[in-house]
Amino acid sequence: MDTPKVISEQVISPKGGKIANDHFIGTAWLQIPVPDDGTFHRPLFTVTFEPGARNNRHKHPGDQTLLVTGGKGYCKEEGRPIQVLREGDVVKIQPDVKHWHGAVPDSWLTHVAISTNAQRGDAEWLEPVTDEESTAINQGVAKPVGGRAP
Ligand code: MN
Image (cartoon, rainbow, N blue to C red):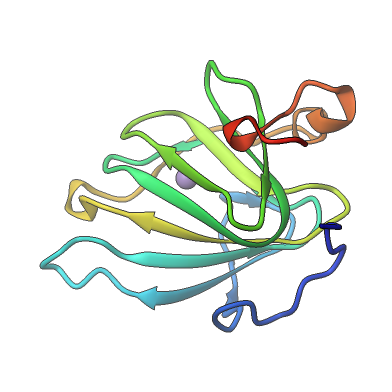
């Protein structure tokens, strides 16, 4: 399946509002299908990254699962190879593992971020990701999720 260079502005939910904080490089959008209800502590966030956009390195005190719903992107966990994300991929990120995620330079990316144990607190935001790091696929070091073909 070819990777779309532009995905629909509505994959499974509206792309939401533009993220206005210092934790992203480039433009990204946030929609919240399930807010933290204070009981089950399992919010869902739909994040849509414009081409090249990515978040800064960060850690989640609870865990995080990314379900890719459109486009193409990256996820990089500290100490592991950068992974290429495509629609349908699922990435599980353990609590307090330093990582970042975002779109490749020539495609949008949309994923649903499923957090559990949200009562442990918000993400801890760390340093940004350089352009060189975020284009690692072009240097031949990126690995696909689950061993499938790139
Ligand atoms: Mn994350």
